[in-house]
Image 1 (cartoon, helix red, strand yellow):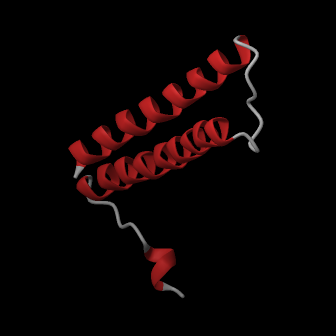
Image 2 (cartoon, one colour):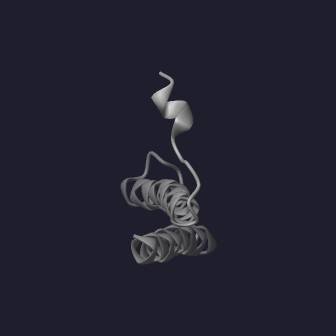
Length: 80
């Protein structure tokens, strides 16, 4: 599970960075980076998706490390 978290972090980071670079490139070439533009919107969604993926993969990595260390995780979730 730890390896999956690391791969997820790398993939999400790559996706967010690549989409961000595409937006910068569009801006430098005086193309629209507005979300109403079809191509730009795809890049904005890539940035957002990569950012969410980074957070999810990071949380997975942290929780996996905690459970492997013998710590109880999810006590708050069980209180609901």
